[in-house]
Image (cartoon, rainbow, N blue to C red; front, side, top):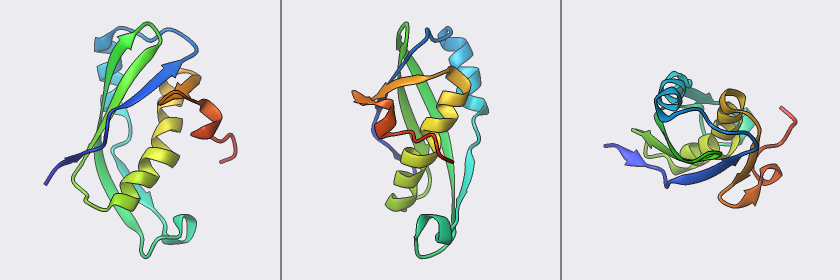
Length: 111
């Protein structure tokens, strides 16, 4: 069963490429993530597989959607909060805000 995370709006400090380039980059994002029970304080190690879709809304704004087959809410949450924003930033440049909140609310510079 496939479930979708809510759409997430991300603003960047620099202009985004055209949609076809965004599609290629989003398709290349790592789709398999393993979350260690020790690191994330969850009952057991969990691996999720996800597909990432980005829609260019404006010059420096995109809507991101994640589709996953895993129903484990905590893992999708961890993926969305801790992993995906940093990966998107690595590919598309500095994030200004996510869901209207400043970058620092979502992305910490410590690894």
